[in-house]
Image 1 (cartoon, rainbow over the protein chains, first blue to last red):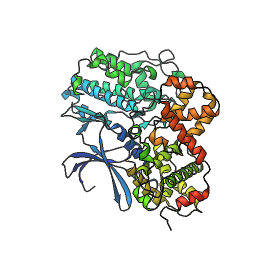
Image 2 (cartoon, one colour):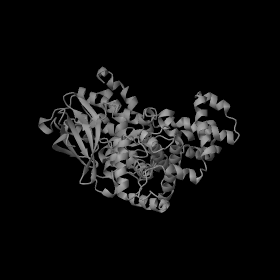
Image 3 (cartoon, helix red, strand yellow):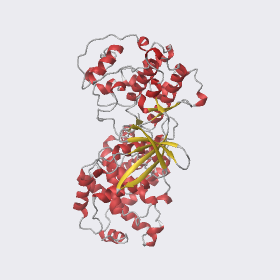
Length: 303
Length: 252
């Protein structure tokens, strides 16, 4: 680890601190993620193992943050793992915030939203095609290179390869605001559409510059969703009433989605609507989203 | 949605026969022959299975652990990496990777219980944890393994042969006593196992296999490898195993 000079702490990952550092020989900036070893009885945390093995598999894509190497150090006889990632200067949350709030507020340029959405769908499609769902997509987990206009998916600690039947995963996963309704309602089987829901929420948030469904409890989260998209029933979402955590909810009619994202054009609105489909099987896939007409006027040669 | 084996590191790292059966120079010096290596791998695969039964982990974890174990020894020598420690550590690592973690304490408890009599099997928690790190490096942190179990079910449904699933499943389990998992795509191994089961159970499936348009030559090779195990290695006399194990560096 002597090869790196730690510059500052930039955040707290799923299982440890993240530092900005410089590789002394090359001057290259990197992000160092140290694996926390709180239970030293159990060696390398399984979250770290999962993240490393998934990243090994996924980080050939430029839309997934690149794992450069794994460094193993012995600190006073205790093994520590450092994951060395490429460094990006900001994340999507901070990026949205730089466009100001209140009187100084200016929208995120539509061309940037379009480009970011395309890169996000590319990255998600890449993960899904490798049998990996992310399960915790949110603006803080999307790293941004402002200069180059790049967006990359990070923090795959909760991702998993779904090589086993998609059953009974732990339910406490996705940050509430981006959590898909089937997860909130306790579905025992869920799959890649949960990521697409998150992508939809992020899409809306880039346009609105504030979260679409800022719930502070699971119930509140559902009510936020129902209030905008209408309370689902067996017609709009077959089988919803059989889900484990289904209760009787207030009956809302669907609102006009356009009003929630006034700055989004009609094609963007159509894509958003397809991402926020209640029925998971009907939700658009990441791969199909890439072919949506919203991206028609995007110069794809750069991707 | 099916997980994508073809895009995986597992797929890209498939090896040829001469890359798995060889004896590394350090082991040659100790007098280990390809036959010894084969016996040691089978013996320790059985050990992994025993440990797994005691610690109550799923077959899938066993399969992943054995795949790690076999992959490690394509690059590392038995002299440098003691298989008596590598085997349980592979199980430990696989249990984490497959999200059903076995506590190191419990694992070491059963390690002592099962083979405490045998020389050289005494290891402590700290040894397992140290080896875990070395294994991660030896495996380049590639931990995702695809197995024949899932394609197997799909294939049997397609062939209308779900009645022989138990038989095929056991054959797939036994395929881990060979290096096949390092060499062939999982669905091909599944087909090789189905092929054997159909012969045993006297099922007529030639037409179905033909329609699959897979390379029957490869399928038969896989089947031969498994049949070789059944014929020659299913019940290995203890003296042969002991003789092979005796060539490993002895621990006090």
